[in-house]
Image (cartoon, rainbow, N blue to C red; front, side, top):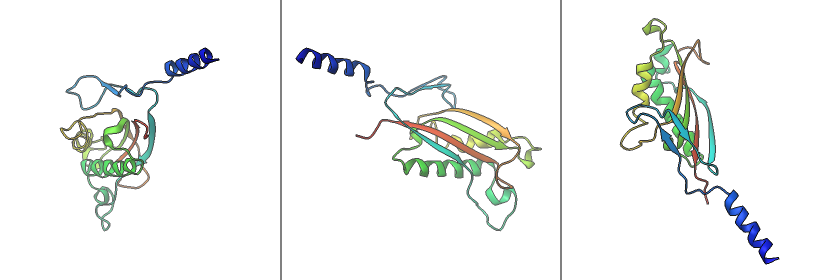
Length: 162
């Protein structure tokens, strides 16, 4: 009976992933994103729905109501940061990001990728927060309100709380 118990404990130890493993982010270190992120088994996954920008000028209409792409990106990422904090996580835990950009009327209807990157780089790949997620950025026709140029959703992973 003791051998059976020892065998079961040993089998459980082998089949249970060790949380000593860390999230691995790969790709060109000079890139603003990770080209690949590996999350080991046993981590908690947090899904944050698409967030849109806060109003920066309630008296304005269109894009001016929410600001340019950089301003909107910063506002959205701050909202994502707050949502993650509510779950005991932070931006450093983000492993995947999906960015939707509407064509900016000031840029002949083309998405302002450079403006989004300016806002993004204030939060990711910095000395204070060096982690970078894998990411996709796409242009869409419209978002839920006129003048919104940015919507971002993220997935985060962190070690479970004990």
